[in-house]
Image (cartoon, rainbow, N blue to C red; front, side, top):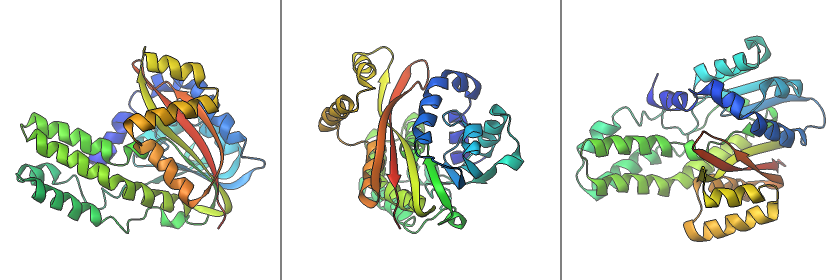
Length: 298
């Protein structure tokens, strides 16, 4: 298991607990998706399936002749079938690494390489030379133009940045320069828009003419309990109020990766519907998630 697989596997480890605690959240997601399914479709593709805790795979299968689930983590995808008492002949399982970092073996020598770099300019040059080689990265090209519906689970914030942040913590534990560690994070943040833009275009290419894209993206994180969390939970059912909260938040903190991913899609497709949901991630944290559908006209 390589680092990217292990990172995603660790995200899915508390599957049974989350499967139960996310029941209401999962039902809300499925209700949002159902609005867009007027008849049984030929192919429905899931990006970032994980353990299937946020998407009811059995229900999705009822809406499509072929259900294709994808993730970097095979173990979690197989677990998702067990959770819904489904068999492999009911679903097509495909492993996919969405960021391209695996294709360039980014993490294989990352620690060794960085520990040998002692100045800002050399560090930025190293990172840019690695990441610029991803410009033409594509995944699951055999799925291009074949799918009626594509669903993306919350993963804009997981497209490499979280993994690199983990490595930065390891570097600090090895007494690497905090200043240079921040340079790594800042450089990656600067390059994340290109990574997300490329990912979004890749996903749109999966769709047939007049296909539909449904995206779940985590926008706010809040602790339990908190004043900000109480404000979110009071207003989650009122889109105008939630959008006003979001505008103030963005004005103060700037655009995050989750909202950038949605903004990027709005530049190349037509937004259809949206809704705000509460994702009860664990006992300490919740997320405000934006569910958005896009209509594709090729």
